[in-house]
Image (cartoon, rainbow, N blue to C red; front, side, top):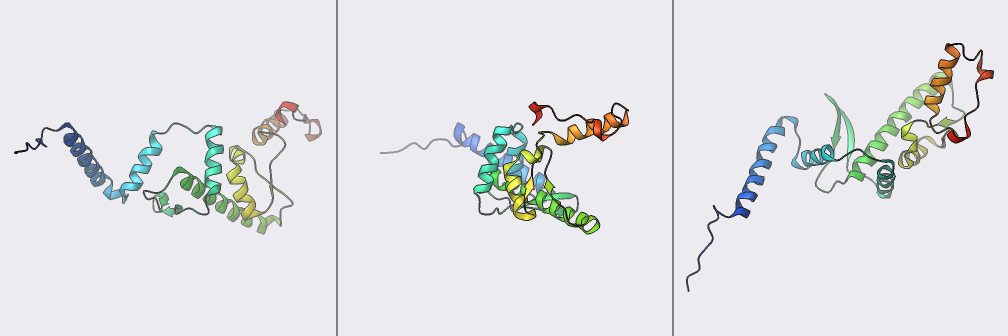
Length: 186
């Protein structure tokens, strides 16, 4: 019995497979000057195509990052800025988030140490702003810096800026006239 082999040049599956192989090869060539591995550029492609992160997404990402004992990813200072190192095929978004949380906290610890040399030891550390909503960041800060409180006001920085603007504009004569935060902000 004679079997007829399919014509691979005409097979749709073969053509699609060959096109994706050639596209990856061409992209590898284009990013070679950037010294990116395929795993790194695929990761960056994935991140670039993902929409923004909601608070719920951030909470899930925090939990996933905190479940990791460590991350192979780290962020280094390169010649042209920050460099994401250690990205390979097994890296998940939680690994990169964990590396970002650790990098931000290490930088905050360095700044805190420099400020403490000038001003003396801090009585209390308080985290404000968007990053303070990250449970992952707060836990890592606690590990590196000790206890870190959150202010009772949800957006303390914005409130403080508004109150200082009120003082500068003469709306309030001095800080004794500054209003207490509205209960909805606490």
